[in-house]
Image (cartoon, rainbow, N blue to C red; front, side, top):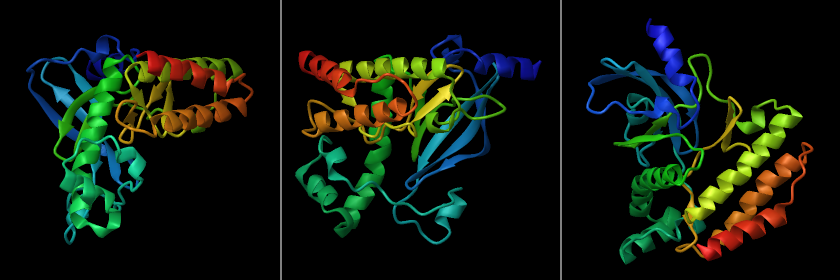
Length: 266
């Protein structure tokens, strides 16, 4: 039965057999609606129907064009205008030519810089998501790049998308488990030389007792970004404060010191 195959493929744990990807099997993509609309990008639900192995639900994150023409956003399925991240600290580690670096640093004064950033953010997010997945971080499986973004595993099922941690109703035991998984995710990112740089309860999902890290376009590397350690401390403090307010025993400074040691020792 179609729906039996469908639910089996989406109720297994992350990194389980459901992540075996059909190799060369024909498929058709069918849009299923909008999951989330943000300042710079929208996330669409997509059903990829394979010829024999059954469907997969994907999240297609698409970045909006920075200078759209008349009706272009509507024609491409977008709903809002766009505002790309302007904080230079996230871009400090980008490997750019001097002209491109100057354009990016010019911010709102450079249209070329805006257009370049529009191209680089999805590339940056794809690279960071791929590296995080390969390092064993609980992130959505990176499926492929698209013309204006990236496709990744959809966290949820036919009935609902996984809620953000900030919106999930967790028991005391679940909160304790989520904090333990948070530490595991931070350690795995640090071991890979990465800092999420925007970690909060709004960039984490809770699904079937699993904590999933999302939204990595602003992630930075220890080796190329001089603000990396400050951003790491902010990440740990942000999530530590959230868990602490809910009764979880948290030692932000101890965890941060452990991560710094890992980063220095490589």
